Image (cartoon, rainbow, N blue to C red; front, side):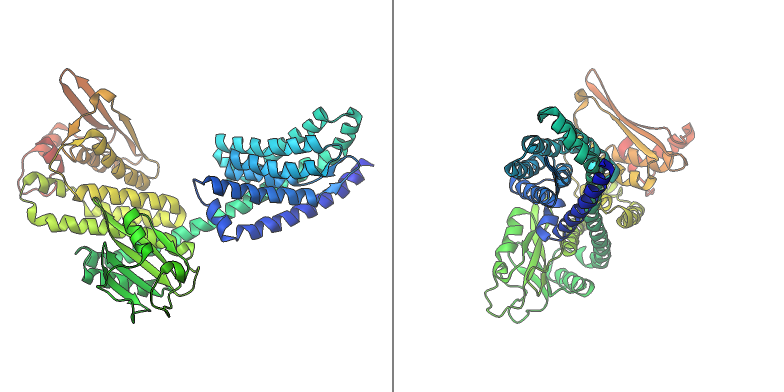
Length: 532
């Protein structure tokens, strides 16, 4: 009665899968596991840790499997296949080796074939993940992969095990339940893993929105530069806006500029920086995390501060200071605070860079610098910020990328060089502008680059960007269906021609002559500056 046997085995496998789901669910709440899972690039140590995580899940699937006369009906493949999908080939192979070796150690008729199948399933899932990364995020693909892998598993049992009639008997008993139940387990685990990433996106989106609010509130102060006064106002705004902070600190490279919050009896402004974690952020240009009082290193014996995070503030010349958030409890800096302070660090760095541009306004005696400075359009800034706020609610990762491009765009506009720059640098500046505009157009703006290597040269800064801006604003913006901008180059004899074209609404000859006509009182002089 094979149907009765299949039903009994399926029931047991379902119970086994339930145990494994509980195991993985609680594992997904472990901070170390989540931090590894959320990384784009993992170290060898982290890959080993992931292999052990999922290899253990595979062992659990064997342990709670259903013994038969010739082997086990089990859910071992579930953890191993998920390891390959989530971690790649190395992690899949490692998890398969761990779970497969355990199965081999149990012995029995199918020990060798089952162990080899487990190893190959993990490796196969890792190869599929490398070729098609979408599989690790989409449960239907994971379901299909699990089905194919288990069919391969059954095939190996028939190919390797002898006598053949005994192998057929084993596959007939365990094959159908495992081919059905294990792919369902793989798809369910991938859905659980996807939930981890979804929760992180929610955290990043909330942090981005709060960072934008704080940046807006602090603009009036940081536009004066990183000074004790601006630092004090900024730290106070952050302290009042973000919940459950113990203290907020801002420093330059050597001195504490402002301290707001708990601990004022021994942490004071205008004192020399003593904290090693703050020095580390200044020296490396990367954020530093101290989750215990020992790592904070405060010499005061009764210091109430338990954890801190430090993010560097920088300009084009390097790190110029830090922003520090403190909390009272140890190990209490959550992913939200990490994403928040990283976002604030980027925004504040851009604002401080803007302040340097305003400081240089007294030096704007040359007409070409005035012309270049005039390219900074406040309407573009407000439109860009509104676009980013929209993506904060829907696509947090896209919002982060747009913030980075916006910072690069204004940094290049404000820190103006009177020297020639490479064409690649000019194209990168144009690309920062286009990426933001493409997000606003939501798929209706296309850009084609056709610049051969023999056109690489040095050009005046911002020589092409006004052309691209005019093509979008006056050529494509008025066209409901959007359009295409083509940026191309041509080398002829001793000359290089750089062309910006669009398929927008166009201009007649009179409009072209009017746009290029010299007009000293005209405010919009970007196109005239390029023509000049």
